[in-house]
Image 1 (tube, helix red, strand yellow):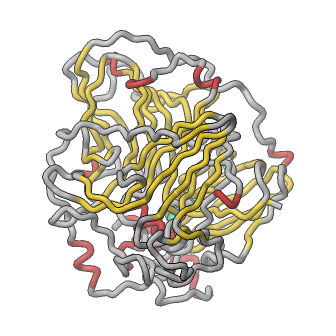
Image 2: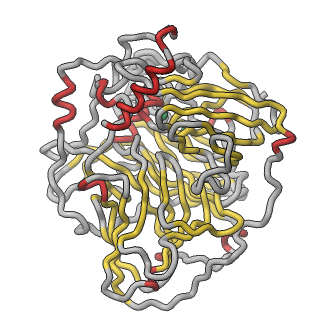
Image 3: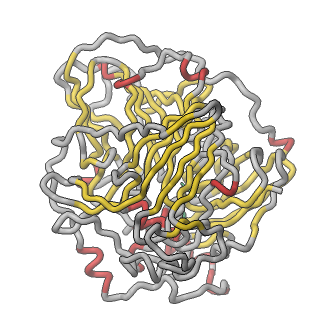
Length: 515
Ligand code: C2O
Ligand code: CU
């Protein structure tokens, strides 16, 4: 893999040998390597399966301030590849999980019940959430079936707040409209548990967005992009050292820089197809892949003008739209874009392609322009109202964090340290602004819980083409980025980490505590 070779070279120059690391923890059996690399999914004819849309979950009850939801996390079978039955772990037994539609300012409580054989943790990614509901990696929900022995199936659980069977997560939604997502965040096992299906969308709406003449209803389409590999009999293939996910964490060492699948799924379907009309569509993109970034483009590109008009980012609407011919989206990032299929004649097939893919991973899905449709939407020049941005001169602290990939069984680190739930790397004071200077080698999507930030600069220059708006994840390919955030919302302990889930599980994570 090109990625890991680059990693080795750069790491070689940094001389990490002086760092004390628990070798052995992450080293996979070397005889697994050949086998692991050899798994290829059963072939699928692309663009045959209609694009599924995850169902919207109904609250079990509502009152004046709150909508209450219940979800069961359980094993189920799904027909992902036509003609094959795949065992998944899903919220409500489906992958992606059901979508929650929330209103800004109105509280949501989600009761999560764990009917899986392993502990789980549920994190709302992008949520401004009190610490006890944020899904801290050691705040486990033990299986409902387990006895009250707190150690069941956990190996060791590092002293988090452990629940038995069920936990209620409280989401105040005191934040602007945006597309968030919820996913598993269990210490050491997030990669395999998300891979098996534990991810879903959580969309917050507000009046500002409602007032805009954007495409809506069936012309607002969420696209959850993932890559997976399947075994010959259709099961998900993930190179865990312990496939029961009860004992030793980690993956065989050839996958230490990420598990990349050979089959691209959108909303859980392989290379699906969506019939569209000659009109603008709002595509709400989420890269929910464990490790794979995508450089998205349209083929053929629209005859007049850019493929995508970006209207929003991780943290919601931009102030003004931005045209892009390509979008680079790393794991956990969201891009909210408008595509104008009115620029294509009826009968055109438009592929959403991945310019960084090779062979099957170079395709994502297809849109078939199937009918004339009347246009009602517009893309206003002004989207979100202007708001004061964090002011660099008000930053009370500048911190520096270096993210370095592991190799040859060495864990991935932040400032050369592996994750320790009991060590706090930064203590920002509530309602103060800080600048964090991030360094990444070779390639990491870096995510902060609780806050949304702005990218101030990259390598001392201006931010990159995909850095606009409020972000909670910044994709770095070497070099440095300065981000600025105001640590508002709640006091407490939160994590920040690489969102390459194999790096995260292999300890590329740290704590900050808002004090
Ligand atoms: Cu999407 Cu800490 O994660
Ligand atoms: Cu990483």
